[in-house]
Image (cartoon, rainbow, N blue to C red; front, top):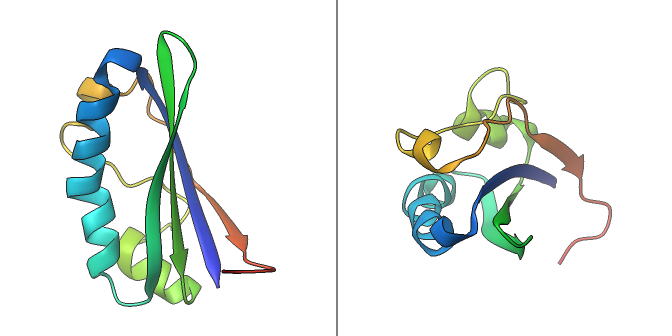
Amino acid sequence: MIARMWRGRIRSNDAPEYVAYVNETGIQEQRRTPGNRGSMILQRDLGDETEILVVSLWETLESVRAFAGEPIEQAVYYPRDEAYLLELEPEVAHYEVAVGP
């Protein structure tokens, strides 16, 4: 199993709206992609900023490709992401799950 992790930072005032937006776009698209084993949004309050972490689990790298395209390390962004994010991280990280749920 593969874990895909994306990280972004937003203004804390935007956190509820942005989390809803990510759920409606990226999370729902991930969950519709064959091979997705689950997706979640984590958030961490850093005062004026909030860090968002999207973690998705995948059966194989091929199933990640079905969602992300090539190169699979490139972050997937949606039309309104730029309005919220303080910067656009160009890449995501992939990990082999050594011990899973």
